[in-house]
Length: 252
Length: 377
Image (tube, rainbow over all chains, first blue to last red; front, top):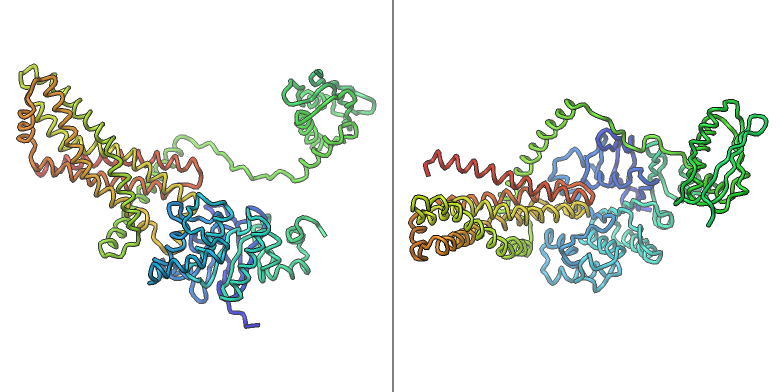
């Protein structure tokens, strides 16, 4: 097993909306090649955590390190450069509604690469095929179902072959087969491209299928209560809230 | 048809109260209130037990449950034992389910009443903050515009042409109608007064100068504020709700360059053209009154107008048009990007955009008028 190298480090993080503290004192490390699950009950601040990691919201306290770079301590151009090497899949896909799927996935390619239009079309077709949507390039986001929008969103997040991919509730609203295919896609991407994945989810099947590391955010205590591989946590934890979560509410 | 719910209280021995429920306890009917029982319980401080007798109960639904729930809570507080064996089994199970998760204490945000002074203070602070946000937005726009001049702005040319078509070509019908009618009205009002002096030929001057210098730009500006400013705010506001603007930001594409710049350019290009067109329509409207009501010949009307309207008037009108176009675009885009994350927020953003744009248009008209006065044009 290759030695773990820290990719993203969070130190003493506190997230707040004005005076309302969502979570405090969060410290964890996401290693390269991890599939890192951010999990917790509803309303615990998982999505807020993600917005802080991707640069959309600043933390009330604490630091986020990408490698050695203090993300929130740097100026906006540096932050831009860091986040350009990340891909983000938003909860409902967040596809630009005035553009077709092909144009959606093609925009990052047009903006940041020198590829010819024909080449870009080839890459777009490839990314769509990877998420099982080959041939849907000319459709508009309003013309496809919610699950398909999510998959197109993933294709767009992968467009530039980023080093780290963020997923915000990827399986929410997907049928079981699509959710399983999505898990397989995530594992495959990690195998072939060694991409680090950060997944915000509370879908247990996915958590156990793909998670190699995780952090559990306790909504009642407003802080993190556990980190580690989800399977190990299930076997070893004594925290009742975590146990309840990992066993889908059956106290064992 | 079952009789509607009936309630009877029986005080039995050893400080216990039996509540007998009969008839139909369904929501649509007039049902006895739990307060009756609560009053009775408060009137009998020694009571230690509450029991139920539902032998006469024919049917029930949520009506029964909302009667029982406050009783349960009261008894729990006062430590009175409840015997639920007399209740229907389904009702018992539902009550247990409703009580399973304790109510969250601080879930509802506290609504504090603020005094009038505090309210004024809050509004003032908000006003200065809003002014600061507006300045920041204008600054960002200038930066994006400078990037454009350097040829490094990131936006799609197709977006620009689509917006040009929507706010330019598609606005012609309404601009025609409104400016034609404004010219007509101006001429009509002027004509009545000028006729008293036999000076009705000067209607042509009046309409010409008023329309070309001022009215065409203002009316077109207000039409565009409502039509296009609201549209921009709604478009960008919905994008904000759908996280599409977040997606642009995390891809490192500046929303200012991608979304705001094409809109501003489109309006700045189209407004002068629309103003020119509006000038013609306004003068035509005046001509209809002049020819139809005042018996001025068409050629005569035309040459009088041409004599009165000079290039300075035209220049000021077109300059105002460009300024108004930029104001409408900025208001629309700014309110759109400041939009909250709900459907009503999009509506608020559209309203605010139109109001801001109209206020901006009138303020800048005042400024331009004062400046022209000072410069003697």
